[in-house]
Amino acid sequence: MAPIEPTRLIEPDFWQLPLDDRMAEFAVLREQGAFLPIEFHNPMTDDTERFQAVTRYAEVVDISRRPQDFCSGQGAVSIPDMPAEALEFFGSFINMDDPRHARQRGIVARSFTPKQLQGVLDSVETICTEVIDGFCEQGEVDLVEVLSQPFPLLVICDMMGIPRSEFSTVLQATNVILGAGDPDMTGGGDPLAAVFEAGMQLITLMNELADRRRAEPTNDLTSALVHNDLGEDMLAPHEIGPFFILLAVAGNDTTRTAISHGMDLLHRNPDERERWKNDLDGVGATAVEEIVRAASPVTYMRRTATQDTTVGDHELHEGDKVVLFYGAANRDPRVFDEPERFDVLRNPNNHVGFGGPGPHFCLGAHLARREVSVAFRQLLRRLPDIELAGAPVPLEPMGVPLVGGIKRLPVRFTPTPEVGS
Image 1 (tube, rainbow, N blue to C red):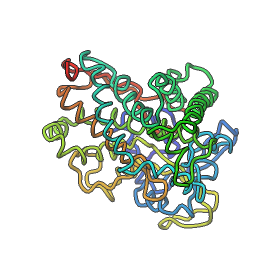
Image 2 (cartoon, helix red, strand yellow; image 1 turned 180 degrees about the horizontal axis):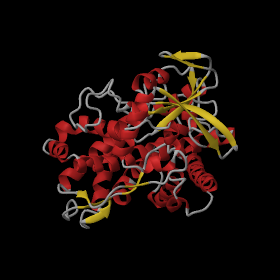
Image 3 (cartoon, one colour; image 1 turned 135 degrees about the horizontal axis):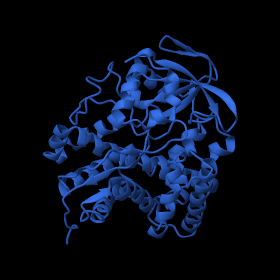
């Protein structure tokens, strides 16, 4: 393939390409350099800004391990700089550096250990069964609408103690935030206004719930974050809402996108699908890791150099913005054998689909792995002939999407009865 201009990465149609086509272009860009300079227009400030796209595995990992040299709290982890109030509103502690980051993440991490999450992990199976029961008799559905979208969000809402009566409110608001550039999600109005309105809805809902849990704690994550008897630090009232936005959006969409892309990957790799279907428990763990590697649901994170430094033989200066493209790193042939091949038994598979090593590695990776594993184990067991009935329809992004989402994924299967019917 001929050389590609690095500015291709900020063209909206690049992010609407089929996954394999997009990764083929990334492969060309990756060989053009580990750091690719790009200029772009920031619509929020009307300024021309610059960043360097990081496309190779070693450099992504090195930067991720050096938070003192490459910070998250200066400007944003999104590509454009954001106003300070927007940083506080969206993103919670992923937009922070130590000591604020360590404090907030530490509070939340107490409730995100495998032991503390055991009740949630057990409920994943029940919720997935409930969701598949809702469409298993239909024979043809949009998998995003009936499974990828509601399943992980129901897990999060139940975990936080949000009543089912509020689920549609949370779903609509998270869809607006996730699909900010897509008129199907925002209703065709001003996308930035729609995003802030959706964020306010989530914060209001969460603040009301937190107030109730402070007065009457129950056995849910919200209670654990705002009430304890051990003298431990807790999230302040103004920190609860932004954390819930982070959880409901980032925690939901990683799984949502992995399930959708995973179904597409299995459709295009029938031998791998059969390998998994014939040994659901034995292949599940490596298959989930391969879906996350191949799909790389989280597209990027940005870091900002805090001082003059080098990565490999590349010089960077204080204030330089570097954008870590995880999908490109996860297909780097310097690390992965036959990186374009989807292999449900790939081992080792040290991908960066949950972020690079370091303080910002995905806190919910354990839960996300469980959700994806349960979803495909149930799908392949209960609907063994499920297949795509049309091409995936990607979200229309506003700029470079933080998560490379799929808006619709038509599938068909032989109808089966609900469990227990």
